[in-house]
Image 1 (cartoon, rainbow, N blue to C red):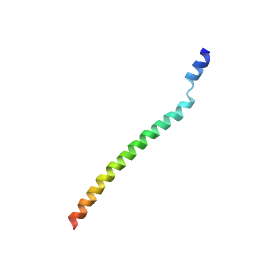
Image 2 (tube, one colour):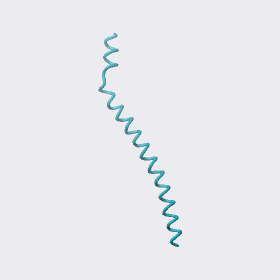
Image 3 (tube, helix red, strand yellow):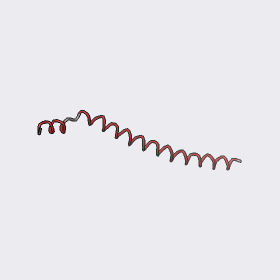
Image 4 (cartoon, one colour):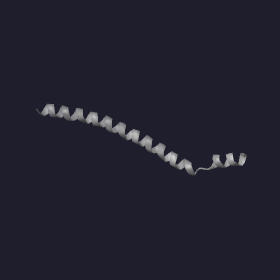
Length: 54
């Protein structure tokens, strides 16, 4: 029984997929947050420039 627990605990093959999934989720959160922030600021800048030109 202890050998089975040790073998399951020490296997690292399945951890790679979980680590990649966590990294992908973190990257997606950062990208989406950045796009939302830049998108709203870019809209304000273009609106301000358009009203100045009129």
